[in-house]
Image 1 (cartoon, rainbow, N blue to C red):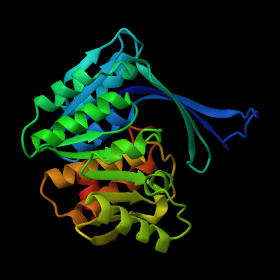
Image 2: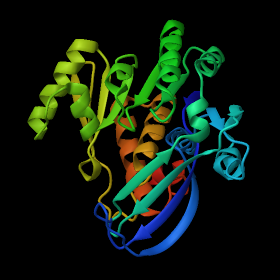
Image 3: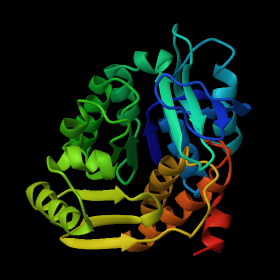
Amino acid sequence: MITVFGSINMDLIATTERLPQPGETVAGSGFSTAAGGKGANQALAARRAGSKVKMAGAVGQDNFAGPALALLDDAGVDLSAVARAGEPTGTALILVGGTGENMIAVVPGANGTVSEAQALAAVGAMQTGDILMLQLEIPAAAVEAALKAARAKGIRTMINTAPLTDDAARLARLADIVVANETEFELLSGTAIPNAATRKAALEKLHAETGQIFVVTLGGDGVVAIRDGETISAQGLEIEPVDTVGAGDTFCGYLAASLEQGLDFPAALRRAAIAGSLACLTHGAQPSIPHGEAVDARL
């Protein structure tokens, strides 16, 4: 089973022909709302990939709470560890440009109330062989408590170092598997990475120091990882992206689920990369997450 300890949001999405420059106003061509939050997105992705999933986090007592949880509930995600906070449900304000690239502002709301006590309760309910997934849209103290409790209990952990925070590098050291994009990995490695050779050297150095598995997502160029001293690459699909929101979360959820289901690491990496590609073909974070049958049909 996979427990996801993280954020739950409602996404407010505006589409534009291009993203605005600072101080500029551009005309929008569409508006929609969709359930989101990095934690909830990854939980839904892991569930659609075929694993049993429990979501731990918080929503408000407002009109956004129900819609924010609806797709998770419909998919059969266990929501018993989702608290109802006095703060409003978290929101993400998203602009999507004509090429599929995006700009996002996140208002934490109830996510900011997630506590160390919730972390300990979530990990306390887990069993050996489970996987704990985390991101950085809830307080760092709660993430740290969950990681330390999981390590003490021998539970495998995966952290996605997004969004990039001041605590990212420190917290990443506490996880078994670290998933980062190119910018985030530069922070983790402490060095500029202008090319693939530099990235490989940085991966090998970090891996030698910590023994952790590192996974670096490269957008359209796929993904590269290091595990047990071996560097492994995987490609997604050649696509024309419609909306990249949620692609990284889809990748993380599928990677965790594939490992939990017993796939070897290279196969899990490839399956996750394909799922991330397919998530770019539909608007919205959770609506775009593909089901396992669609992903496996492309393997």
